[in-house]
Length: 274
Ligand code: SF4
Image (cartoon, rainbow, N blue to C red):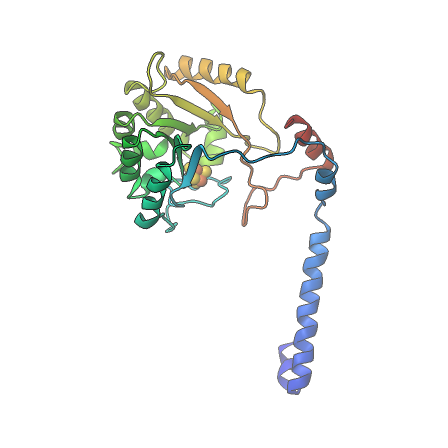
């Protein structure tokens, strides 16, 4: 092809280049055609309408920097990401928190604790009597330079919502990286020692389950009991409650997880969301 292009006249070269582009484009379209079209399934659903209410909980992503690189991460966070919310926008957030309807600040990332402005923002929010939730990956509490983060969170009465996608070590390490499970256990013990997750304590510790395959979570109440029993017996760890969420790497660029989902599975998933 290169030889043909070199020998061709300018007009002919343009014609050849357009032909090549068209072939590539058609190839992409053909690949797209092999994907299952899910739109007709959604159009015919009787899923209830979603309506907008007033702003009460302000969720803020403080950046994509993270000490982990989980396979399923939908923002592809990791230790080399540079995107971090800057001071100017942090100031805007504090202004929004002054609105009377906003009662909760929900911080996520990346690892939100790695934003250099994290502690300033938390302190400012708490001074406004705003409830603060830290979506914590647990392992950050064990990282060098972050060892006093748990004490800071406890001192500011920050609620912790922590990822633990399973109570089985292999499942956690498979999704979140080798060694993450044991570091998570270490962090949970540290949080318990500070009063998190203990009966009668105002320091709440919520764990979050996330499916490790193409299926929806099992019933939350039953799974919470399984988590509580296993973690108490094996590690003497306590927590308040379990949330089950569905955080799947659907359409994630460069995802190494390939989950073939049938029309039947999609219909079952939509049905179970009601
Ligand atoms: S800990 Fe959370 S933010 Fe960090 S890579 Fe894993 S899923 Fe992404």
